[in-house]
Image 1 (cartoon, rainbow, N blue to C red):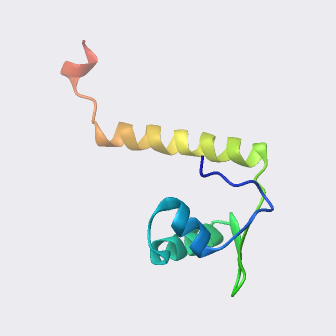
Image 2: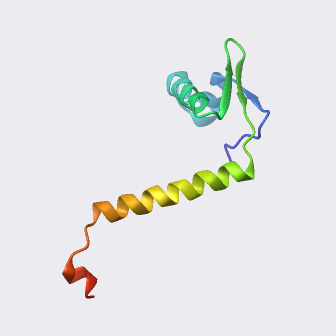
Length: 85
């Protein structure tokens, strides 16, 4: 499943072994997830998975839908031929 509940303490080695990669990409991913507020890093101990509320998930999904719809409209300009179909 590779999902972790809020409050779970993980190490780079555990995740690397589970996913089947070296620790370097795991470390980079963990640093990025900390910046995004999803993990709290504890040097020499591991990372703590921070809880995410249902409202936070809903907000992210709604924002992503708006951004992706806008990007799709910009990427495919409407032409008169397409509009008459």
